[in-house]
Length: 106
Image (tube, rainbow, N blue to C red; front, side, top):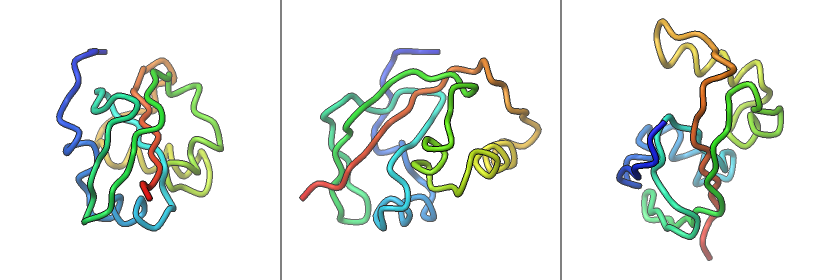
């Protein structure tokens, strides 16, 4: 896992996820790479968001609450979505990802 920070504007690129974040249905994004530091800001469709927290997490440590923060009803739904997005992938509980937690800026 790289510590190199990628372009924050590439953190959330799918319109469905952007809408979930704007509507408050999604407050966290887990990615293989780090796209932000705590305190960074991100603009999505004219809405400003602040990165409240960034940390490493193994997929096996993702909780039901984490899955809800990701915009899913439960952990099983999150796992199913993740493995279907990344065709041919399997849920690897030892895979480390970067968790990015966001809040809407006033």
